[in-house]
Every structure is written in C-alpha cells, then in structure tokens.
Amino acid sequence: MGDHLHCPIDYPVVNPAPRNRKLFLWPAAAIVIAVLVPGNPWYAPKISLHFGTIAWLVDMAVALICWVHPVAARVGVLLTGLFMGIASFVHAPPLFRGWLMCGMILPVVLASIPVVAPSVTGFRARLTLLCSFDHTRELMRSPRYFDSGSVLRLFVATTVFAVALDAVESVPARAFWYLARWLAGGVMIFAVAEMWTAFHKFLAAGLGLTTPLLMESPMLSKSVSEFWNRRWNPGTSFMVRRLCFEPMARHSPILAFFGAFIVSGVIHALLFFMALLSWKMAVMNGAFFFAQPLLILTERKLNVHRWPAAAAHTWTFVVLAITSPLFVEPVIQVIYSFGSPGSVLPATFVVLAVSVFATTLFLGAALVACSGVGTALPHAVETSCPAPDSQNWIDL
Image (cartoon, rainbow, N blue to C red; front, side):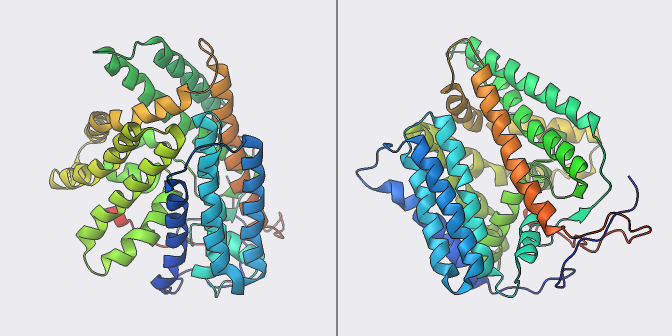
C-alpha cells in the first residue's frame, strides 16, 4: 500500500545485544507467585468482578510506576504477580474470571521491561520493545486505508462463532455425540482466533500501522510447529522462548524444547483450574500441551515442511484434532458457563468485546510508540524497525 514511514526509535534495534538471562528470573518468579496465591487451603472465589476490575487498573498503575522508578522495578514485578493471583478469587462466571486472569498477565509483562531491559529507557522506546516483541517483529507506520476485507472476515468469524456455540449447546454431552460437540468446539475456537486476526488487521489499517498480530489466522497453519510458533498467540510463544526455552537450552536444547511445553501446560492447567474449579478439566488442558512436542517431533521425521500445501494442511488439522478434545472441552465449559440457555448472544458479545478491547489496547500502545512521525515522507525507506530472525525456538 505504498511507501512505509520511519518508526521513531532512539536506540539501536537491528541486532539487540544479548541480555543477562538471570534477569528473566524476576518475571518467572512473578508467575510462580501468581500460581501459589490461590494454592492456599482457604482458596475460594469471593471477590466481586467490580473489585477485580479495579484491582486490574491498580495493577496497571503499579506496572507503569515501575517505568518511572526503575530501581523499584523488581519489587513491582513481584507485586504484579501477586495481583495476577487475585483474579482467581473473583466470584463470576468462568468466562469473566478467565479473561480477567489473562488480562492480569499484561501488567506483569509491562513491569518486567525495566528489569530485563534496563538499558532501554524512555516511554516510547519501551513501548516499541513491547509492541515489536523485543524487535523480533516489524513495527512501523504505513498509509491508512479502510480494510473492508477484514470487516467482512470479522463479521463471518463472529457469525461462525455464534453458530458453533449454538451447536455445542444443542449437542448432548454423552456417548458418540461428544465427537460432534468437540468438532463444533474446535470450529468455535478457530473462529475466535479469526475474530482477533480480522479486527487487528482492520484497526491497524485504519491507524496506519504494521505490527505483529496477536493472532495470525491459525487455521492456515501447514504444520504444528507453524501453528505454535507463528500463528497461535505469537506473543506468548515469544515469552515462552525467553522465559523457558532460552535459559534451559544452554544445558540441553531437547530438554528445553519439552520443558517449554511442559511449563506452558502446567500454567494453562492452573489457569483452567482457577477458572472452572475443576481438576479434571485442568489436567485435560495441561495434557494437551504435553502432547504437542511429540507431534512436532513426528512431523520433523516425516518432513512435513516438504509436503504439498494441501497435504501439510491436512496433517496439521488431523493431528491437532486428535488431541484437541483435551483443550476444547475445558474451553467449551468456560464459554458455555456464561449466558442463558438457548441464547448465544451474551457469550458472543463478551468474546467479541474482549478481542476488540485487547487489540485496541495493543495497537494504541503501538501508535504511541510510533508517534511524532510525519505523514508526508516520500520515498522513505522500507522501515527503520527491521525484524531480525525471530529465532524459531520450536524448530531448534
């Protein structure tokens, strides 16, 4: 869509220097605290959703204070971990409690930046670090335009989600009907991912931004590796690589590979337990992640990346479908718990609203990071924020 504009950055970004990996122990400790808080024997969700929302706002304020006073940043990181645990005490439908717990991750990430990247100073510089996934993805200005295609995709994805959710509610949860239930649930989850992708592209086009996507059409994946590393929540994939894989890879890459998925599985299991108060659903969700490295190793042996596109797509959907009930059933119970029987509109509205809010928050930060740039710079270079090799840790 024309020449791109410069992204204002006041520090080198092409090949950022390696950082002291010990500093990443602080955000890791914050996550451990968040897990331990609801692990006490008196755990029970008794806090109102209103109070939980206020706690999130206070948590965001604590994270931003860490940017003003970097000396206190390490304490701030641990405090945000403590706040993250508070979300599990909210007395609300699992759908609300789950979204709030996911939202509590953002303050942890924000508070961690002054700790893991102390040499990066300045508000815009830190936002750029965050929104470019530590300069592993493009972040730049581009011409504004109305992306009608993304609007259509958003409408279709939202409609598909509502229809799939209605199918889940209509299918009996027994015997062979579970197959139809899980199929509809899988379609529902892919529709949610497409809602995030479409709205992100639409709003980014309107704001004149090129940024990494929070979801990148996972249904287009041609391998399990591509699904996890590039398309399904790439921001989380980046954090897993930084916090789990890289520290362990110094000792054993293969153990680090399995360890990253195991850590991810444990975290997801605990999140789903706190959302649903069901260890059965929690263990099922965690087991889904434990199985993924085995699928990736199998597709390497089979050289799936050399297969024709149609065959590679088929492989990806088949092997993910085999393990998907472990992930789909807990998600169904989270979403199904909200709304009145026979009506899919409340849950559909909440899911759409969350995707709009999260994407707007991310792109708003990206816009501030690229602020102060003129709009009439003809023949500008492609970008001053190049995206170096993203170090695909899943393929290491």
